[in-house]
Image 1 (cartoon, each protein chain N blue to C red):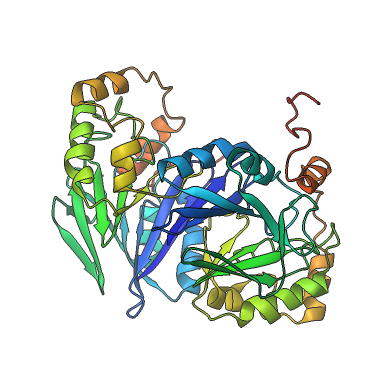
Image 2 (cartoon, chains in turn red, cyan):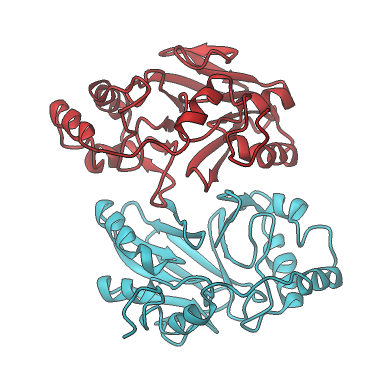
Length: 236
Length: 236
């Protein structure tokens, strides 16, 4: 399997490219609208055909490239059962998406948002904002629920084998990946903390609202195809 | 082998951690002084003992963490034959550094600077600033030489197998890795360009000086243990 991790420095978002090396069929996870040209160029150079554009959840901190990529390639937009109304395909717990030899399994991991899913492919799990390296996504908007997130992290993700590689939706300290074993021991929010203590911690984070919340959420409900959220963009 | 890629967002520098999974002996390539605590913490969490801190060259855009890491761990600082005077070990073309099952081979790849080396470990090559994803390091200071860089890229690095994974010293567009095959075909500076055309291109880049040039080079000559280059640091 071809695998590539990509980064958007402005929103600290990781995008993932996975493809079958023989059939050249590809999928992208958690794209960023401003990086669509970069991603299309990489697909072209690698001789890949994009079949699916998946989001782990409805993002509040960046706009997905799913809609634009669908327009440009014919790929299908994919999300969890409670994902954006614009998507073509909704997947639930245990559903498997096959693309050549790439077998992607859906794990429902709500709590950061109510639609959050993780995608497991072999020894890798793409956790979106449910589980970050040594951290976990905030739970104070978009139907977030700290108790539910605790259950997702400890009851779903921490049940995976220790050597499962964790690829997060963001990182702000320069980590690109981790493992389930590491997070079970060292995650600063969820490790060695019971559910009540986790809920209390998450309730006291007092974070400012995400910078793009008001623009990103409506845009992502339409797979990124509404008004451009950049301040200098025409307001069409 | 344990492998981890780390990122410093301020200087867009990639640091690499490699370790033998059984003996827990580790080495770091191209550390960043401001990230030393992060790196030490990761080593501790993973139960690793740091033996070597390698630099691919004398950096002009960030200060190495090698000196501090040596102080804190007893690790040896390593560079190429023409590397900083402060290092403990100088390696030349073909030299091999062994650390448990990790076998790191030195490839001399001068041109970005005269001391630039790449480190090859199995299917991975750590190219510093000699070869970047779709790009190559500038050659207009620190004894840089565009013709020499062309020879290093096309005569040394492009001679590696196509599927060798390229891990660069920096990236500014969100790429984390590439392959030799890709770079041979798509590198925007070196692919499909002869030596004279490459030299001409590199001579006409007209880039501003690196922001930290005046502080970073003297600091790196002492493995990062001179005055702190941060503007708000005490000028001791």
